[in-house]
Image 1 (cartoon, rainbow, N blue to C red):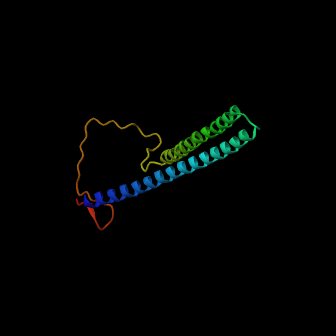
Image 2: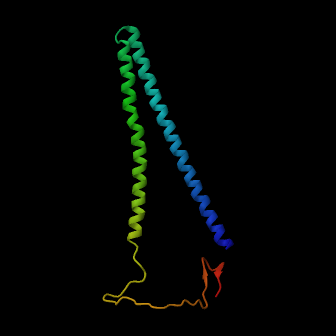
Length: 140
């Protein structure tokens, strides 16, 4: 049991580390996207403010530029989220197809009659099992 528990804990730690790395990279991606969006908005607003000050645009045009930039950027957040969801769906689908393509080790012979079991009994006699040859789990 100790071997199994240690093996399980090791795999859980690996999974947690990979999950944390995924979350960190996702957070960095979100921060980077926000920085680019806000920098673009700031540059657009500065240029628009200069044009309003020069008399080439009015305040309504300034608001319109702000609205356009925000309306263009908002779908980018949805695209990023959708991309991640689609990517995860493809990974899940690949695993499912891999599972469905697994051939059973034991198959019925063509034309085999159905098994009609009315009573049963299971006897464990001389059963042994180990993950490796060093640490046996069951000694029959």
